[in-house]
Image 1: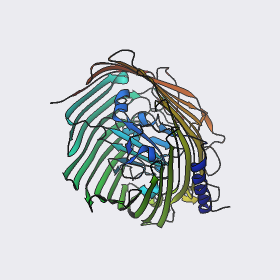
Image 2: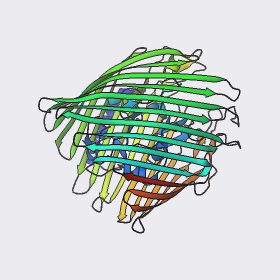
Image 3: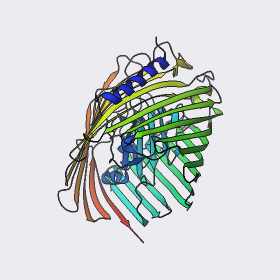
Image 4: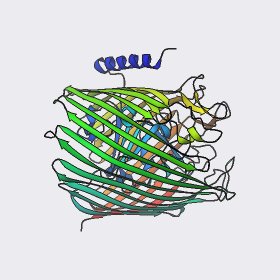
Length: 617
């Protein structure tokens, strides 16, 4: 068998060749040409110069749909699929390019919000409210070079400060509807010459529906969330920033096997914060960022028999980022970070530290071409060292509106504290899971950029997969690798001044180490959307999410097949003025009876009415 590094150099050579001479595929990038993104290089860069696949959801996109949960917006992007075990507040797995949440790094204002006390390190997506979120960047592909462990599939970056206008502004958003659901959000923002800040308070409550698809007892949920973010320039060469998140969710659940109505319940609390400073030297040629962050999670799970289990997790991290403008054509970014994770549960009371350093060169010999190459080395307190690398390229033919892009890189996932130290199941001899990922695509613009079409091919191989063999956790090496292959396609079309259309299609082939299909991942995933402005002050929007050919089940072979489904949502809004909106929206308008996880319930038809207003003091 050829080594992974031999295959890596083959892919790198192929990507450079294809990038330079052909246009086989294309990728959806949901942004205007001048949009700046931060996640791909950890410093601002024009989206049109990024070699990796990146998507941006702006504040206006969030307000147009008025959906209460962050996961509702991510679920509309190509290559992403959300798999909730029941309603809001329950375990929700983000799947990116066929890989689950433990392979996706999730940041809130630069804070890693993944929970470290569970079997897998991943965020509590079922609890993340959209209130106060101003911008979401999604970066796909192997990103361990810049972000370390867990970024094998990509990175999700949530921000509260995107799109803040100048001056002080208050915002109110209130909604109520089916299943006795209520949502409220208050925001206070300020934009000034030397800084900006944003404060958000959100509340959500619902009687919900049965977590068990066979159940008849509703399982309710409540959530209170506060977010804070701010940045202030003390001088032209020095700025300070801070951000914070407080989240408190309470969920009624079901349990048992098979799952059925019970009085089980759960609670989740998270407090996280980050502070730092940015300073420049040598007339602005060298820019530096230093920061410290902490994330504290507490989860309680009470079974139907009244037994309560607790899971406490703590992460604190220190980070340095530098960016040096060597010449107009060459920028070098570099950095170092160190973190410590600690988990306290009934079976695990352990901690581990890890740290790393990285460097990346961004080279643009002329405006149409941007190349990057990066290298990182990490040291882990248990398994030792690991080195990862990444290279990307973007080339634009301005005369035809065509842009080619490609990326290739390696990634790794450090074993979790549970995988290392759990009684019976744990194994302190585990090595990290390692990966090789590759994507290539082309973006084509028509009609003065009103129509953008995209298509991308991607592949990721994960070796040394951590699984049970037969009881304890082991690096599974003899049965092959976890593989994902697929195609992402999308378009956005400003057809007229009153009609916008968009759509995305993802084909995913994902297999486990035994060659069987990965579960809960549609082979064909389609997302469609339209926005119509039929008259002044009126706006109508609709979306459709179509999942075809999905399987589930970990024991039986072949897998059991889940029903295909089509979920249609719509919203009609009336705006008496530019700062006020009254709306009515509907979810699952076709009242589909479906499952995304076998045995777990999903919401039926629902109608919600809301009010949104912004005003200055």
